[in-house]
Image (cartoon, rainbow over all chains, first blue to last red; front, side, top):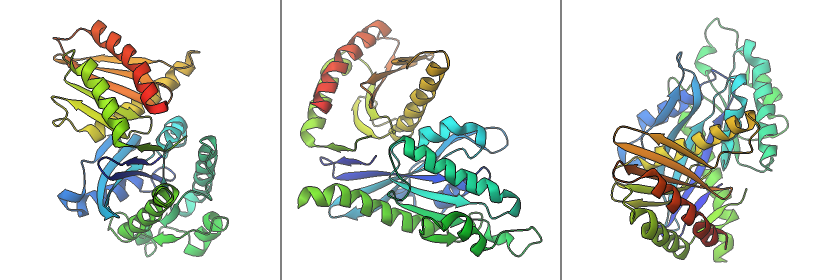
Length: 206
Length: 131
C-alpha cells in the first residue's frame, strides 16, 4: 500500500524481497546499504536470530530523488525465508507495492524456490492481490558459484521453473560481490514507482 | 486493503487533534502509522530525535505479531499494547483496522491518562481518516 503525502509531496513505496531461506535477501539489502551515499539511505534495521537468519524482517529506507516534484522514498523489506516463519512472511508482505523474488541456484534448493514462489502467490491472494498485477522481478542469485564444483541450476532451468508463467524481467546476480544487485533494484524501483503513480497521481491530475 | 492519499487538510486535522489531546497531556511523542509501517503523523517534543521509520516498521510488526498471538488463545485481536521502561514507556493503540497510534511518555504522565486520551482520540481520528 503506497502512501502519498500531498502536503510534503512525498511518495512512499514498499518493496519486498521474497525467496527461500538462505537465498541472499538480506545480503542484497546489505550490499545496497554499503554502496549508497549517506544522504540517499536511511538506517538499516535488521532482526536476526542466532546463526544469521532473519527472524522477522530487515528494513532499508532509501531516497530515490524526485519525479514531477514528488520525493520518492522507498522502503526495502526482506521476509524470513524459512518455512516455519509463514505467519511473519505474510505480515511483512502487507502493503507491498513491488516484489523481488530472489532464487537460489543451488540444485539442492530447486524445490524450495518453486515452493517459495507458490507461497508468495498464495499470501498475496489473501491480501486480494494477484502476482500478475503487482510489479515483480526475479533475481537469480549466487551466480559466482557457477564456476565452482557446487552443482547449480542453469538460467534456462531457473526460467523454466520460476518464470514460465509470469514472464517478468530476470537478473543474474551475486549479492555477495554486488553483481546485479543494483540492476535488480533499479528495475523494480522503476516499475514500482510507475505502478504507484499511474494508479494514483496521474489519474488524480488528469 | 485501500491505498492512503493524505491531503494537507487531513494531516492538519489529525495533528491538531493529537496535539490538543496527547501532547497537551505531556507525552513526549505521538506517532500515527498504518498497519504496513508508513508514518502518517509525527508530533511531540522528541519527535525529531527518534528513528521514526524504524519505530513505525517495528511497531506495525509488533502489533501484527501480537494479533497472531491473540488468535492462538482464541481472541480476535488485542486492541492495545504497553511496554514499561526505566525512564520511558510506550503505548500502542489500534485506531480502526488500519491505523496505529504510538505514544511515548515518561514517568511524569500516568498510563491511565494516556489510555483515556487515546480512547478519546480513536473516534476523532477515525472520523478524520474515514469521514
